[in-house]
Image (cartoon, rainbow, N blue to C red):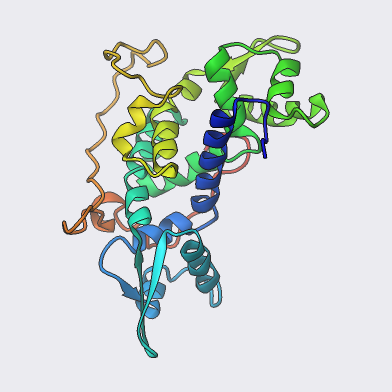
Length: 280
């Protein structure tokens, strides 16, 4: 059943990406996935890595990740049960550095350097706003769209004025631009910069290799030569340290908390980004 007035294949693409966000955005999910990014762990071993979770919080989180197909529960004996990533879970880890790269370039600079896990959580807060994926898809494909026209595409069965709350939020978040009331909406520099993130999630959610992200019909750049992006600040920025790749096949795990997220993935986290966008 269509959720927008977009073509069925585009509608399905948006739905898959929205579902992917729904899997990883709930609080602590990414941290739990990262805590499992090595050998399979017993419940008590995993609980020690995410010790800030109170009694009773970890089990339902693990169950949800198992139901989503990201974590596998293996019962060796009645008293020996371990948890580890599925192949889908391992593949999803490769999307996380793409999110970090976008956050480092487009989110407001914090007063002090933030670990990658916090960059990911802040980014997911913005990208899971209601109707965000559909709005971003339409603005990417049509460049400029009025609020009324956008509503006819994104929420065709609802009152068209209902498009404005999510639109205003995306403007406040810095992903969408407009020149004022009654003026059309367009993607901001940060919104355009989401191409690698949304392309990677689209490829992952469709079961394709992540190297297909660049071939996405909307967010990719097939056979395109790299060109300077006008929205990148001329101000010099330190080059982010390269992030290790996710483990594949029989290779040893490359995602170690000590390398990628320091102690942040297992230390007690700070408060999540407040609603209102990338103003930390």
